[in-house]
Image (cartoon, rainbow, N blue to C red; front, top):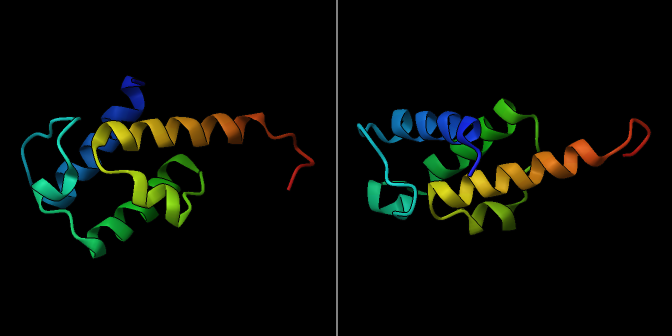
Length: 86
């Protein structure tokens, strides 16, 4: 798991959920993540990492580990696109 991405994602969710720490494998809903906060988090993640997260991808992100893996995959796809790709 990418530690740099984990650090950003962990801080974002700890701040948003107002909890001192998060276990990367515990579902975020167990910490109080609801649909509104989830949407806000996706928007923040897209902005922080300059990626696009589809609704299906967002729905599959249940834990911090899932979020980090999705961001890592999105960055890999994004990095693989040439300047002329749209």
